[in-house]
Length: 339
Ligand code: AFP
Image (cartoon, rainbow, N blue to C red):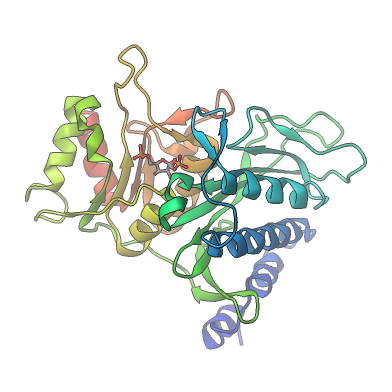
């Protein structure tokens, strides 16, 4: 029986660790370090999931009173998730550095811990302003591999991206990841504490019938953006009829729906600051991992003129506009933006 047949035969019983090992076998040069790294990350995700699930019962709701590097209010669970990830991952032995959406600078691996060749960039709890009202939040991660020699300082220009994924803390907790061999989704079975394969080989339809955007920002958009969004409400679009609008305001939730049903999620360029129009979402810890996943599932991701995965970051916490989803829907928007 082939590996794929084994997965399909027993897919409800395959744990994420078994799945990772099956994929590891497909890369003869693999040392197992990447699998080890993902396993540590999965444990951190389970710990975060446990606290998110009990958020209303523990003293973890509300803000810390602090503001992060993005100028956003830090929620107690943001801080908790960030600490869990840093604590676990600095001990993994697989990383040479990390970066978190919650921290201004890169996070070095402290002296005394084994260093590896990977870089982990994460948003520990995306959508955290939704926690207090019990709406889905998620952890997003991107795994880069250093391209510079091992005995030199690790920098953010080390940009090979062998893996990306997210954990969605929703009615059930789901892990969705790619290592460049398709996109696979796992659901946490709390009774056994394991993520089990529930969504093998996820594919997005070529076009959908849902658009997702914060239309409250319309006043700050340029004309091409308004024309594209209005197009989704007309019959002049890839589906040939008006789309439905869905917007949670948690990227992981909006992205996960888009990945499964098709359509498009957008956070367009806006002119809130007329001197410097920009997108809201962070390139390295939000746009880039989601773009990798979306392309692996057969979709597309653009900043309006460039493929997200072709953008070389100029600094940590760089923001970009994001148009991600079904190929035809993304092309439809970028055609408006570049007309
Ligand atoms: P928070 O983590 O501050 O809730 O921000 C969430 C987010 O980065 C992303 O998850 C959403 O898609 C986006 O912001 C929502 O932004 P708006 O509230 O401006 O629509």
